[in-house]
Amino acid sequence: MSFVLEHMRDNLWRGKFSLLTEELCTHGLTGRLGGVSQTPYDSLNMALHVGDLPEAVWQNRQRFFHALGLKAEELVTPEQVHGDHIERVSRKQAGRGAREYSDSIPQTDALITDEPGLPLMLCFADCTPILFLDPEHRAVGIAHGGWKGTVQKIAQKTVLRMQQEFGTRPEELLAAIGPSIGPCCYEVGDEVAGKFRTAFAGHDELLQQNAEGAYQLDLWQANRVQLLDAGLTDEHIDRADTCTACKHQWFFSYRADGGKTGRMAAVIALNKY
Image (cartoon, helix red, strand yellow):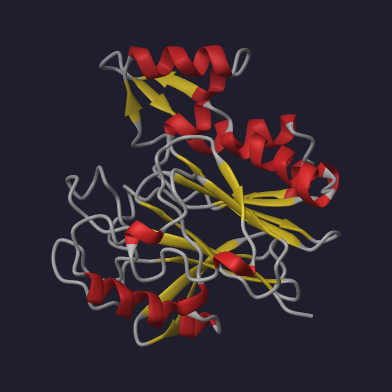
C-alpha cells in the first residue's frame, strides 16, 4: 500500500492511494498548485465558501476534474458543518454544489453512492479525509474527519451506513486516510483531550502531552481505530501519514497558513462498467 503525489500536467498534482484500485474507481486529493486563485487562496483552491472568487474556484474545479477524466458539472459536494450526518446521493443530485455553495447538500459531512460515474467531493484544510471503496458491492464514499467529526466517529458511522444502504461487508471494505494535520503539529487543550479520552477509552496513544502541558492529538490513528472497531481489517486501511501543516507548501493548512486560506479537495467516483 502506498500514497503518492502524482504529477498530472501544468503543475497540477494529485494524491492517490494504491489501495483504491483504479480498475474500480477514480480518485484524487488535490494539492495547492496548478490553479488560478490569488493570494491568500493560491492557487488550486477548491472551495466556494472561503471568500475566493467563484469564477476562480470553478476554473480550478474544471482543471482538476478534467485531468481526472471526470465532469466538474456533475460533482456532488455538501455544506460541511463538522457533524456526523451522512447522505446517500444518486444521479438526481448530480451538480449539487458544483457552481454555487448555496446549492450544496445541506449540513452533511459524508457522502456515499453506488452510482457509477458520479463524482463525490469534500473540502479540507487540516481536517482528515477518509475515502471508502466497496469493491464487492461497487460503492464509494468520503467522510470529513475534523476533530469534531472524529470524536463523533463519522468514519465508523459511514461504514455502518454503507452496510445499511449497499450491503457492504466491513471485512471487504477498503478505506484510505488522507493528508491532514498530524500529531506533530496538532495541539489541543484539555477540553478536546477530554472528549477524546471519553470517546476512545483505552487508546492513550491518541494523545501525547508536550513540554508545555498541552496535548498533541493523532487524528490519523483515531480514525484508524474506529475503522478497525467497525470491522475493517488492518490490511484494508491505508494512511497517507502526511501532515498538511508541515507540508503546507503542497497542501492548504488552516493553522500553518494563518486561518485565511484555500481548501484541498478529496474526490472519488465509481467507474462505469
